[in-house]
Length: 258
Image 1 (spheres, one colour):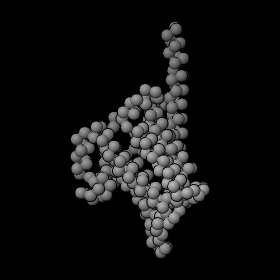
Image 2 (cartoon, helix red, strand yellow):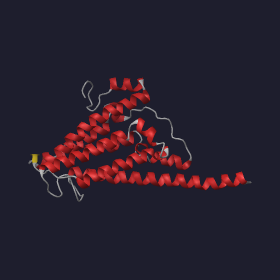
Image 3 (spheres, rainbow, N blue to C red):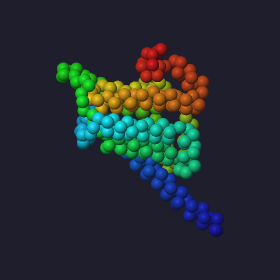
Image 4 (cartoon, rainbow, N blue to C red):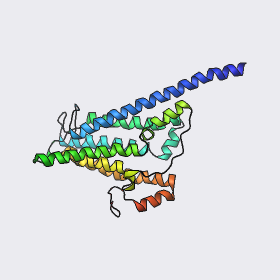
């Protein structure tokens, strides 16, 4: 009877932990959703209260130092927490079911900090005067964001941002083993999400010094991120991914280019 009571009391506790993990994953996901939508407004200077070229004025040196520090913080957090070794260490302290959600939440909070503390550098590098051309470039930027969102759904959007893991944990199901797939955009470039970000950041009818700094540093980080990510993908999928690398270009949809 004592064993039966112990099992009975453990079951509600276990269900509560699973439900708590699911709530945590949901909070992390919706924090990400808010952050990525804010990012569109931040880069495009639309709707949001503080965009890339707005905010309190500061000296060029202060703006450069603060902005580089903010982007470096995001790059370190984003890269370190995504590595296999860190995940193995980190999941000694947190459940595996919320590892991805925790990563997503930290990345989102780091980006929100960047948006909040970003120092504008509003000196104009280029400005497209012709209205139709300016509108075309602005539309191209939004095409980049569409590529980003579409690419996440082509693989597994909810797994990528941790919601699938906590949902499976809630229902007591195991996560399926990772499979290597190349749907739609992934047949033309290996990293369409990064391609979308690059288009979104650089396609600007008006390019300020601050926006140029943001675009240049994030593009440099994208290349570093690709190298780290592909190393992990080769460890995971082996020759299958090596053959994919030989067949499909990295960012531009033509073979033998980047």
